[in-house]
Length: 277
Image 1 (tube, rainbow, N blue to C red):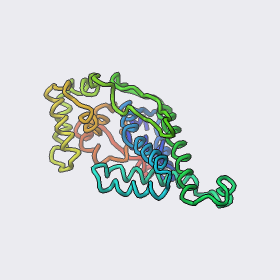
Image 2 (image 1 turned 45 degrees about the vertical axis):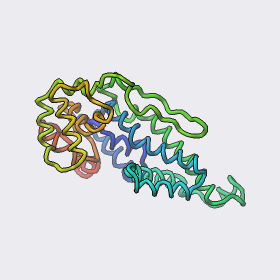
Image 3 (image 1 turned 180 degrees about the vertical axis):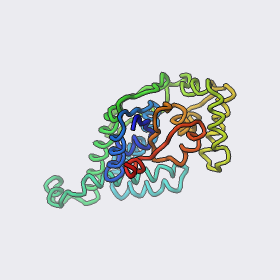
Image 4 (image 1 turned 135 degrees about the vertical axis):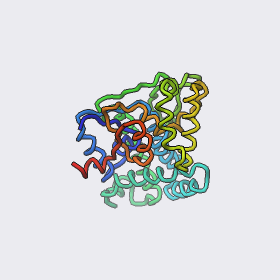
């Protein structure tokens, strides 16, 4: 296979996950001769999955309790931020998976025989999540052969530690900067029209939001694009940016395929790549 064009989901599976999802994503990537990551994927990775892992780490630091952190994550499911719950649970799973083979004796030697179980679990989560987060951000540009479609409006600031908390800000593009994605996409309204028609009647809320932004771009009003608009474009950006000789590699092929097929581009998932090989 020639070239893979990675989206945010595959980036997250390789950088943040362990076990089968990590293995399959890596094996699929290795089957391509070349691989590329658009900088938009890095931007969305930091603002989405990585930010939620950071939330989980910081909640452990502020509560200083394993059970209280679990309770806080549980409460998220009843708020407008409920989408964070699944990613936070994934963060817990990955952190727990990293210490699963540790023995009680090892913890006694490390924390003392009188240490409370809740505090031990909390401290181990903090240490492990911090390692996962910083390692993932450090490796973001080296898992593929090349980072392409750079964004002049976005700067990849490094993560910082402030009073024990991980500070990943800013998660958005530079303030008052012209949206580069809007600028390049609005130059090809005919392609955007085909993409928009393919998802216009899907019924999914995210596609309704995406269609509204695509309509703006088709009307050449890219200067009105907000940070949220840029995020709503999501999958449409990967489909638009993907070179014609590449395959968009994603775990979210259901949302990518209609738009990709509408403009003659290919989409595949890591699991399908591995099964078919």
